[in-house]
Length: 198
Image (cartoon, rainbow, N blue to C red; front, side, top):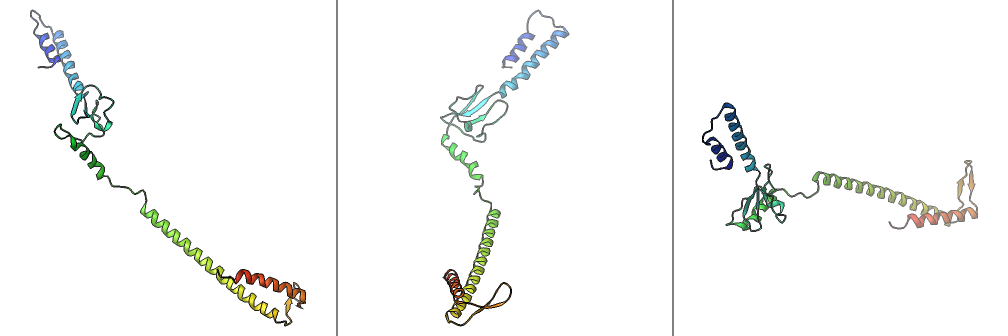
């Protein structure tokens, strides 16, 4: 064995003039077992990263502060850095940006808009526009009827013909000149508001 724990176990077993009892053999086996069992844990406590020159670095200490997190390939405890899939050799340091860009290109680009939601929004806007157009057409129709009635009534009043109207009691009354003048003014206001083009 070439590691320190193995050499210690060999030296301990080769001491001259020693007689080993069962307890000492058990102690030797236990100590050698503990030393050998701790070696894989020491080997796993390794850091791997890509330095600024594009070389892969292995160490038992954390990388310097100027190494970005994406260049850390392995951390103690088996955790890999963000760029754990990057494989760089000193002969090809320029390929790192191209390799790093490949996983990003595989991710589908999101537009931030839901197509179904956009369709529902368009349908709602179209329905609202249709409803508004129908209301405007109804208002225009009522105004046209009001305009027509007001013009006909004004022509009748302007002709000088005696006009009668029904009062609140349901009785028929003939309009005098003051009532006729007031009705003409009212009709002129209706014509001014309802007969102008929309």
